[in-house]
Image (tube, rainbow, N blue to C red; front, side, top):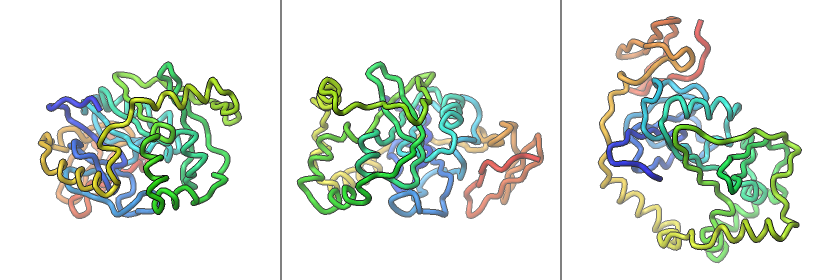
Length: 270
């Protein structure tokens, strides 16, 4: 990720494993771990909000991280428009279509492919994985398979960085984005993995997790006053704060603050 030292960084869908460099965390469902791999981690400024209705002023962040979130969205176009409104640039990570075929997550709503030109293609997910939990189990229990997965992570993972705008297209569900019977396509996909393997990715998962924790303690995060950048999540008007709530100055909608966490979910203004 091309993040500068002084960039103010927002992470959407930070969940149980936020990136060390993120200055502000945002998650829609801090009290529900159903669609993440563990309990929520809140160790820095945090806002409960929907990525489709971000409660932040225009261009209030230099960089936005969104890892394994866009595939959950009800409306990916709205989600993307909010990323571009709030951020100057950022990073999107989703499963590839191959990853979705093999692993399959029942709560994912969209399938993604990245064209060689850099355009993100998005289509509605219509079918569940044929393989159920098989490849999840193999990754968790078979070190040889886990090494193969890590070495070839680009087959399963889209890593997409953007600046100013996001080049994407929503295509009909019946559109065939991959033709794995075409050897030219197969060679292109397989060849794109060459030379992309970081040495750190060859380490076992437990060691990578430990290294991330150590690195996180060493990062200098930018201080941020949430009161200076938070707006109403729908009408984007200014808000006023009290100890227990946030009120929209335009529509008088009241958003609660619970245990110090602002819950700025996308409930329609009156």
